[in-house]
Length: 256
Image (cartoon, rainbow, N blue to C red; front, side, top):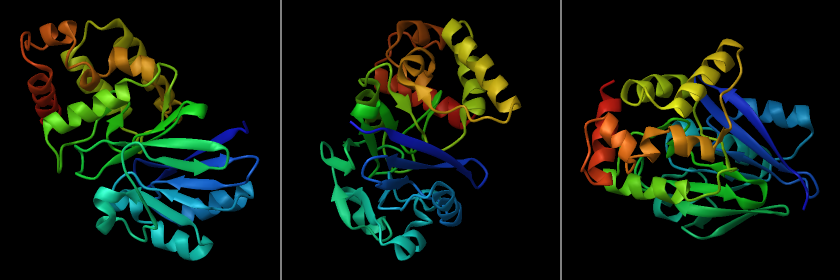
């Protein structure tokens, strides 16, 4: 199988757009293009041609560049069938279990509602790469703007089931703030302490904290650990079911 090259493009105050490039076919996808100009600049530098846009959800800081990029390249815009009316320029509608092909590489689509009602994620199994949009962050998860705690917990369980070597490419650089909150409720977690120290060093060096590793997130991310007896004990939530515990942890983060 050909290589899948992933290029991280920082935009706005804390967004990331990703270019996903298949070296053999030349096909290139932009994941959640908030703006068009940085994507066009990166494509020109690399000598790549944009063939696809992969949207995870409808928010403007994920779809703002859709139409300008489509007009410039004729690319195909892919997004959630459940939210097609809110995805600018959508051409292909996908749902849970569908596949999206970028050259030799196939991404499996997961329905992951919670942050929004029609949120999806893309998992390139062959490249061990997950693009979760705003469902999952390193050491965090998205706010519940349109979905319930139960929906988000079930969505996170889908992603948590992926292999430990899965590289996670969220759409925002929130890791430092997420680490501060995670340490406030799980200070005795040695894996979290190591990750938090690493995050500080990366940001001080002006480097991104992403991609994250799924195995590390399973050990550190409190939103993936709402069924962990250790975390429940640390937060005073022992005996609560995972959905109730997750809802309380999310409430605390919202007010942190």
